[in-house]
Length: 307
View 1: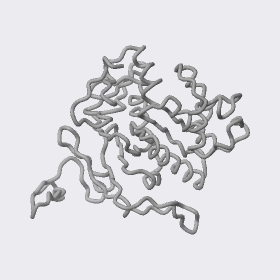
View 2: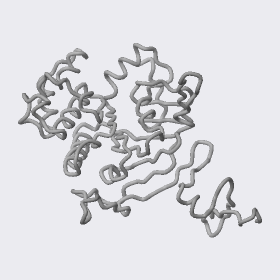
View 3: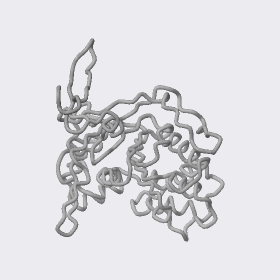
View 4: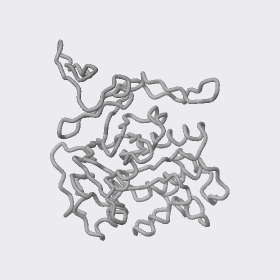
């Protein structure tokens, strides 16, 4: 992997610039990522939030070495993801990145115990370490379930085992795809707390991909992705609440005051106006920009095209 490392001074741990991914489906080309820019600092716990088809899962696959970019820049820890041989890509997935999938069947081997599941990637990597496996399960709160098989565990417990598996070979990056998508609110809170705990204990960088905006409460920063590009981000400005507040109907309460929101500019200086803004003000293909008292004012054109 050393030959792949091309870290630049002061570069973020994850760095993507003008990232493009094109899939060929029969005679049709689908552009899943359309010039995406992203930076993630080492040790950060952050989320990528987007609707179905936004490109978030494609981004996860690229960062995880499961897919190769079509164009642009993508580096993780100085490793250039655009220039890897199949063997190098395999070693990258084995040593640099851990995965936690929404489908627990993809995470766990059903006939193995929790401890054996965590040991399995260590055996494949030649780093068999029962002491570390036990420590990881204790860190995720399952020290008392070492010898239980998935069938005898709840969905939340299975996902916590999956987090331990993802950390088995001590990767610097942990990627999670909809990790709370199949559990209830209380269980989701427990899983999100585990992500915070393992980040604090092991210093691992964690990127969570989700369609659920309520996930934002549990992370330091979240980035919204739309149409294959990052469009907005929000950075925490208040302490993370211990529990998710619910309204009278049991629906999570969105407290926007915890994060400060920003609209992102890509590497070419372009920004995406939120769809709600465009719809509210009738913005279609152009706007006016003015500077007023140190502020940039975006004004929609007058009706009829008159300025």
